Each structure stands twice: as C-alpha cells, then as structure tokens.
Length: 93
Image (tube, rainbow, N blue to C red; front, side, top):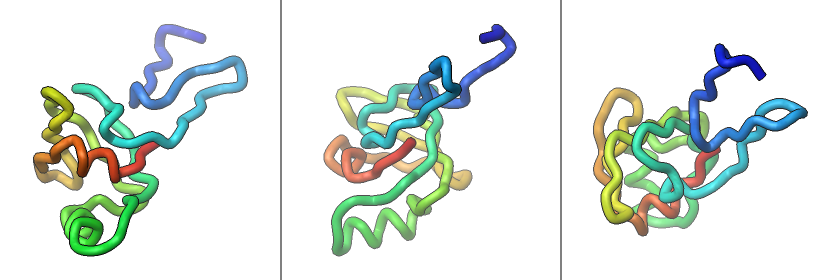
C-alpha cells in the first residue's frame, strides 16, 4: 500500500483484499473520523428527529469533537451535539 493512499475514515480498515468498512455505532468514532450513515436504529420521536437533522442513509458525518462519549458532529453542513446514547443508535460505516 502506498503512502499516497489515505483512508477517509478511521472506520475503514485496509486489508490485502482492499478496504473494508464494517458497520458500527457512531459512538465508536473519534475526533477527526468521517463515516457514512448506514441506518438509524429505533423508532419513534428520536428516530424521526435524527432523520430531520440529516442522519439518513448515505449522509456523510464527521466527528468534530468527542469528550466522555458525547459528540459534536458535522452533517450536511450543520454542527449537531449528540449524547452517547443517541450516538449509539446511529449506525455508520
């Protein structure tokens, strides 16, 4: 693998077969990581609110800050604060 190859996200891991991106909760990401939303778990008001904020399938999300499991992320040009329980409901890869 050349040094010129830069992975966009810490979620993606390089292997001999290429890059593989395993779905995981957004809560596993760290500052500077970028990933793509796969789905939002759960139903009801929280699920609907997250979709309204832009957490929909295919949206790119970047972690701006992470402290004690609480996050500030950027999605669709907006900064959004999430606590760790909500971040755990958002599945990214």
